[in-house]
Length: 76
Image (cartoon, rainbow, N blue to C red; front, side):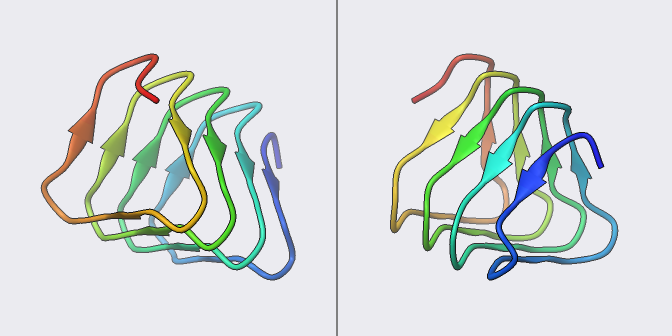
């Protein structure tokens, strides 16, 4: 695995997660998400199905990102 996911997080099948990405406590990454390299997903984050995050994206704690959202590289 080329990324870190805390053991309390759930990552559904079909997700692509880039190298160097960190997914912290109590997150749920749903089916078919595409998360780029070197992203930081804070604790208690929900990323719904089919979301696309570019490279170097930072998501703060307790955020939900819903289906249909695309974030370009470097978004905070």
